[in-house]
Structures are given as C-alpha cells and as structure tokens.
Amino acid sequence: MSSGQPASKAGLLAVNVLHFARLLRRAGLPVGPADMLAAQQAIGLVDIGDKTQVRTALRATMIHRHDQADIFDYAFSIFWRDPEAARQAQAMAAIDGMKDQPPDKAPPGARRIQEAFKTPRENRKPPEERPPEIEAVMTVSERERLQTMDFEAMSAADIASAKSEIRRLSLPLDAKRTRRLRPDPTGHRTDLRATIRRSLRTGGELVAIAKSRRVTRPPPLVVLCDISGSMSRYAQILLHFLHAVANDRDRVSTFLFGTRLSNITRQLRARDPEVAFQMVSHAVPDWSGGTRIGEALADFNRIWSRRVLGQGAVVLLVTDGLDRDGAAGLSENMERLHKSCSRLVWLNPLLRWDGFAPKSQGIRAMLPHVDEFRTIHNLASLRTLVDSLSRPASARDMDRWRQTI
Image 1 (cartoon, rainbow, N blue to C red):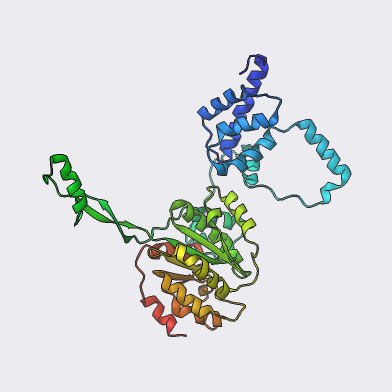
Image 2: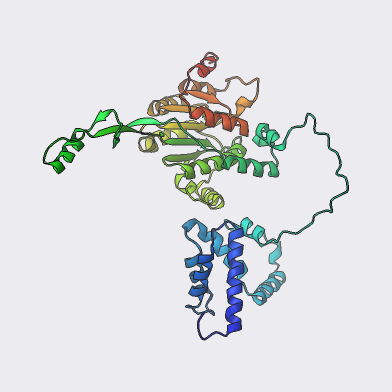
C-alpha cells in the first residue's frame, strides 16, 4: 500500500478487497489469490478517495473477459456503496413517493450478486435416534419425472432444474468430409508438392513420400426458432440449449422469427447466460406476437442463406406450423431452404399429442420439404434429437407423414 496511508486503514482496505473477491467468486467469477494481490497493489497506486479510479483498478486486475464486466460493476456498486448516502437516498425516495413507481429492470447478473450476498445458515435438525422408514417401492425419481414433463406445464422450480440439465447436453453432429487436406503420415493421398519440397533438403533425392488426408469436421448448424405466442414458452427454454451449443462449438447461427426475422448469433456468443439473454431481449422486438413463417423464411433465403448454409449445413426449424398468412409463399420458401442445406429437421411441439394430424395449411405446405419431423416438448425429446443428429438421416420416418398429406 502507499506510504501515505496509516497501517490500520491499509489493513482494513486489504480485508475489504478480500471480502469483495470472495463475493465475486460466489457470483461465479474466477478470481484467484494472484488477482487479489494484484488488486491490493493496484489500489495502492490510485487515489482511494476517487471511486472511479478504485473501480478501474479493481476491474483491471480482477476480471479477464468482457462478459464479466456487467456482473463486476453491479457487485462493485453494492459492495462499495456509502451507507450514509444510501440512507439519504432512501429517505428522499420516501418523501417524493418514488416507492410507488415500478422498479427498474435489474442489470444482468443481479440475481447472482444478490444470492452471493446471502450467507448460508445452518438450520440442521438434530438427528433422531431412529430415522423414519420410507416406503420407496414403485416410486419415480425427480429426475425421471422431469425428463417427461412438458415444458409448458413446468413450474418455476422445474424450469430452473430443466435449464441446468440442458446446459449439460452436447450436440455431436455427424462429421463431414471437406475439400481441405492436412498432412498425415498414414494418409491415403500422396502429396506431390510436399514431397518435392522435402526433396530440396536432400539435394533433390526423394527420401520419403509425403501423405495427406481429407479434413473431416461437423457441418454448420443453423437454427430458425419461432417465438410467437403459441411457441414462446418452448422458445424460452430452448434458448438455453442454443446458448450452450453456441458456446460449445463453432459455426452455429441462430435466428428468431415471429412477425420478422432477427439474427441473434452474436448475442448468444456471450459466455454468461444472463448477459446473453439480456442482449437477445433488446435485439428481438416481436416476442410473443404473431407468426409469419413464409415471410421470415423468404427473408432468410434472400439475405442469409448464402452466408450460413455452406459446407453441408444442418438446419433446425422450430415451429408449430401455424401461420397467420395462410401459408402464403410457404411451400416455395421451404423448397428453396431444403435445397440449400444437407439436412432439414422440423421440430414441432404439437407432435406430443397422439391424435396429431397435419390439417392446417402451413403444416401441409411444409411437410413435403423436410428430412425429419420430430417433437420438442420435454427433456426426453431433446435428448432424442441430440442422439439423432449424431447419425445420418433416415427417410423412413418421413414416409408415414408424407402419406397423410
């Protein structure tokens, strides 16, 4: 610390930095001992009376990614606030009647910071002499019940548990061969150029034959998700799955559509889910509105298809097929979309009903142009989708649906 500060104040400031680092760790930020030491040294080099300088010093030493800045700023504003100023602001709010106004929307990470401030309490009951016997015959675990529960019937606690299960899912798409070659001593292709280049080291004599192999990599994944009123509950949960996929692999493009098409690929790349969904809410103005599937697909085919549907892309179309425009132009745009990708999978939550039949105009216009037709209404169906995407598509599943058109 600087020499101008008393030893007692310097020690108290170091303790506060320690507690602030613990708060950030409880909120999920990776703050280690080296970061705390660097923060204490940085505070010693700035003016302690200037809050902006202190925040900048702590921010430069304790966070390492841009998506952690919002959580850090919210934690700093709460932890390092002035108690007297807070009491005066509360009194002025009571006088001006500001308590009746609706509160502002909390910034990203606010819930995590508030939970980090709470200290765990020990409320353990003393063990009894003999634990009660529980009849566990023919019971179903909570996890198994959650797998088959419909997303629309879940409570807030069930949705939180489902989101944690979704974040653990991975999406191993079937790898495709590309035109690129890479050096491989056991490859099946002779690389004449590399062989001649190597011979220059030995005076033009061929000592070894260079081999190469074609590169295999998963194809691009493009998701078109319906966010209309009938699909909003499913879309909210599926966004957590799409966020996990977008941060787990490259070449993932995500689009939302209701009455218009919105590209949220850049927003979902944020590591923190709360920050990503906050950005999505600002970028999508038509959540829970009407549905114009044909117009949205036309915009995608005209603007985005040539950019994201290369190299055998796989397209996931998430919608119930209920179009407010009466399927105007839907068949033509679906046909173009199908021809632009290698695999088109339609995910429809209406398939959860046993008596489902393709009677609406939108569904009948879309069915002839898809490779797979699957349901997406619970965690079990989501796991089935993950397993199916890791295998080549089969045309047998679509035969029975095409016969009903």
